[in-house]
Image 1 (cartoon, helix red, strand yellow):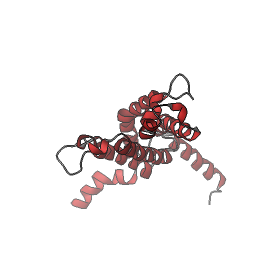
Image 2 (cartoon, rainbow, N blue to C red):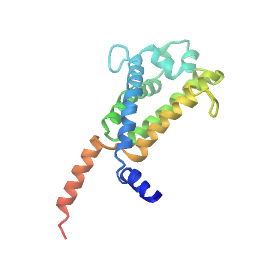
Image 3 (cartoon, one colour):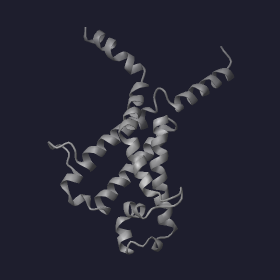
Image 4 (cartoon, rainbow, N blue to C red):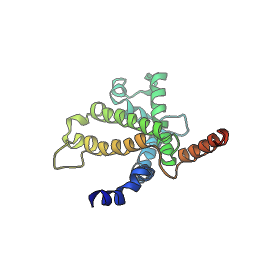
Length: 188
């Protein structure tokens, strides 16, 4: 009875792993897409290559303080890092929602979130505030760093492992590649 029940309930999802990644992409779009895009917009000032003063304060808080909040004291390295981080907040979420290069985009977002979290903890001093840091295995599920970002990483991990799933550009491209492969290989 149990094997038959398992086969009835779970075999379709075991065979077809397209819906979980689609759901992960949907949840990402519904909860984090606008968060990252609005964050990126705060870093631009006037044009696509013009960074705001706040961009440096967000990404290099201690270094920015050390130079007396004078952006002109930063070099090309700082500009390039801030620019890359800003555009990562636009491009990687868009790729995830579209399901285009979803696995590398998910890995990129995971790396971005690690850097973001370390900057929040050590650069902005969040490590000293229990409510910001949070704690696992406690009764409070809303610590910004450990709790919330663990869910973000799990969501992105599903996409990184399973791919983009159904209704994705990756799926369309893979289908086209499979059709071209089938056309080249003669039927036996």
